[in-house]
Length: 82
Image 1 (cartoon, rainbow, N blue to C red):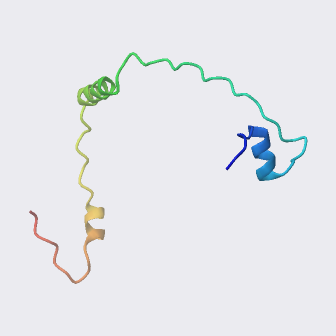
Image 2: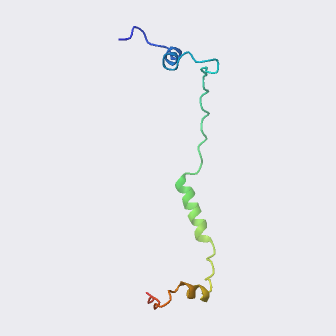
Image 3: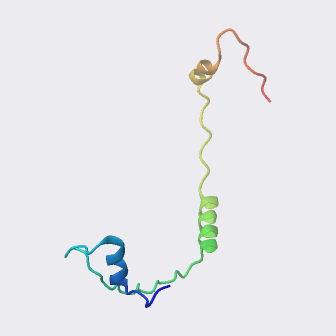
């Protein structure tokens, strides 16, 4: 049973010893209020999606014959196209 509550300095001294001059207690200033964005995350996602949809589609790449030849395994028939 405690006779009286300990202060923060007394609790620190009891746990960590007397310490030295490098240890001191400081008060931290409260955080500044946050500024709220005018656009919600869902609105931002929709705007991004609409910009993606307005882009011009990439032209179809020309088939690369050399790439097709290197992907085949020697001694096996190529798989049937689905």
